[in-house]
Image (cartoon, rainbow over all chains, first blue to last red; front, side, top):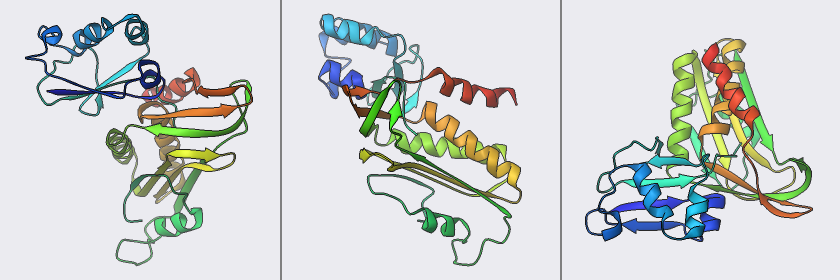
Length: 88
Length: 158
């Protein structure tokens, strides 16, 4: 199982803050190996997910560290998608 | 106030934080350091073309603290620092409310000034906080700005 989190305007546009995905048994996700592949698969959910996740500026983190799409996912990972940060 | 990093809804007391920076963990005075630099960021009334009435700060619990710890560690590797304190507030904030505190001590001022700016420049780009403003034209998420990216990149060249 992996946990997938969404934050800020992305969370609002998807109307979803958290998903749990089983990469080995959830049929749609069985071929997902990398973070970019996960993003592509999630984008297939519907048009809204497609356009929301297409934003090239979105940042991705695995286990609370920002990484790029080539990161290989493993069971137990915590994945997050979010827009550029605006704190401070 | 023993913790170096705090992410909290409650306000902070600048005077108490300043005193804590001058005090060692055993209660004695921190007389090694001759410089203290502090920065406080506040909610401003005008941003990105509109009047702001207040804002809400969202964050990524767990990653926020981890990112801030990483930034402070980088600063400590780069400059000879004494104590470092970072506080960032979350939740609903009103105009002129305090958002962020960075306090750095060092033997000399140059390191304390530079490290304080470095920590803020990295925080602006790498710490997972997001501001949603209430403005005169309604609610909106604040857009990340290129100037913040540039401010961080300047440290690569030094």
